[in-house]
Length: 315
Image 1 (tube, rainbow, N blue to C red):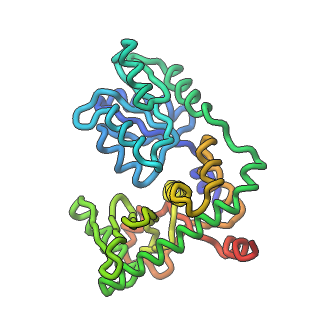
Image 2: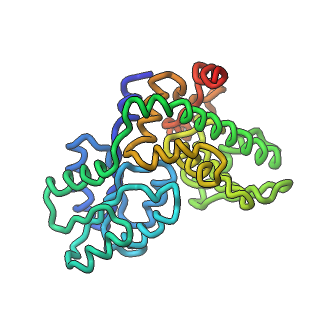
């Protein structure tokens, strides 16, 4: 695997949200100087589009914004197991005691008032990230196989479900994935559907993937569509969400979920570990690419490697 790909796995991500472009640019510059990858949004509603693709290591969000404000965003994030543990710093000019107290009660992990210095931003981010310990080498190696199994189980499940939905429309799975994604991009609206023979199974195209959900069992398996319309690809945030869903339903990965919840950056560390072991590999199109421009947006995807398959078979 290339050094660039390894670096991309390790780099921490911050999502900065403020309706003032100057504030966003200032915080972005400060954090990029510390080695962070910084994503930017100008209102609360944009946050959820980013989170559909990637869970940041820290969210820095303005309290007062038009549309959905910071407090409302935090409240919505806390409702979902996939986003409830994201460390959050509230950035605001409201500095009265009651305002600060309300921010913490809503679920903020840190509170920085405007105007601010680089030291306040950097130290604030470091503080909320250090509030949870990182995994030790022993913890990482002892739970890595369970994480790999979660990757493989999600991969198999999304491939199976995509196949069922595709057959219903008379398409191959990759053609079905491409069609749904292109329809979503063209209309800028989520594309939804249900299985005729099993109507409890719903699908929803949003972001650059598909969410599959069973309304009876609460099972959820989210697909990160891969190059060539691959339906067995995955990424870090969707694997983490799958582990949470399986654990909370009592189906699987209960110990692994507890480990991830207690330790900062753990899902990323597990992904890095299994990639270094060459148990997973960058997902590539299985046939000659026909939609190169679309595939160019689907590069941050993984698949189980032959070495990973052998490891799972032995264990």
